[in-house]
Length: 78
Image 1 (cartoon, rainbow, N blue to C red):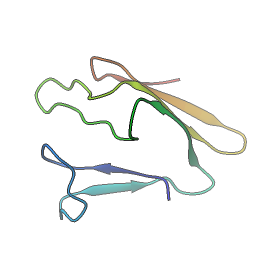
Image 2 (cartoon, rainbow, N blue to C red):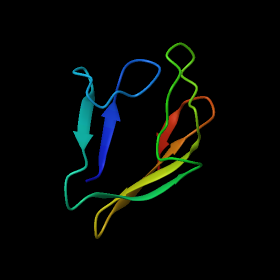
Image 3 (cartoon, rainbow, N blue to C red):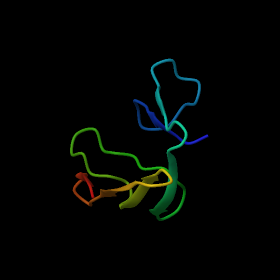
Image 4 (tube, rainbow, N blue to C red):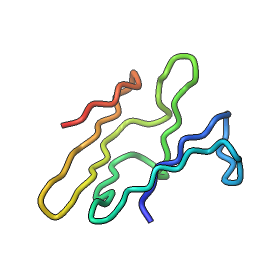
């Protein structure tokens, strides 16, 4: 299933009780993930800078939005 998990710490622990899961509910899907490597982006706690940059597209049959993650950690929606 498509989801976003927000976690605390320097590494992801799937069993951590304070993880926040945001499910992408049908008919929406994560239709395109255009980042290098694994489909994970970590943001530095102090600077906000991301471990990777790229685009993620959330789509339905008739609508889509692209989220762009910049090198400064800014996420913009087109």
